[in-house]
Image (cartoon, rainbow, N blue to C red; front, side):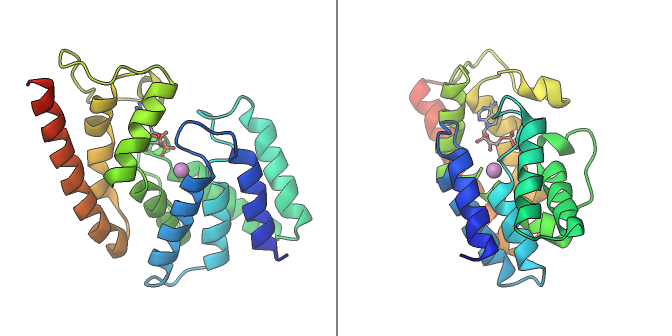
Length: 210
Ligand code: ADP
Ligand code: NI
């Protein structure tokens, strides 16, 4: 088995019990999105794919002890023979690509980081994005909708992690992603997915009786 297949298998094992919308199928969709973008952009594809496979493995909203998980990931990549500067770049991408890491100020990402960020963000929008938001909201005990609770405007990471409503999550994050895509490929896909989310929100509110 080559190194990348071992990284893939490692990620699959790590995320197999996830029930928040960040399971291995999310990872496979992100990898597929990354490959679509890689067909157009020139970048180090090994760095993109390793980062895509591992990007949710030590996320602090999903696991108990992110520090020791980071260590485990570093050890795994070292064992596989990845050079330490490659491993540093993987961590640099994963640490700086998330929506929450970019709330206070926009981080600068390498082209590889921009590709993984776009690939991940594409999976947060559109039909799958809608499903994932409700799945996540249910898992963490969020209310589906409350017309009395307005979407939050300015948020730091702590405020962002406080439960809101799932419908508000569209206004607080998901609808903003279209204009934050880095690559032309992701911008094009995001446009269609945005339209679908806006239609969904309109229908949802009309059925609700608003
Ligand atoms: P990042 O890891 O980029 O900071 P998030 O932590 O915002 O991204 O979450 C990734 C996905 O989890 C979102 O795209 C969404 O599907 C879901 N999610 C996160 N927070 C919420 C929330 N408050 N309500 C509903 N879904 C959420
Ligand atoms: Ni992700």
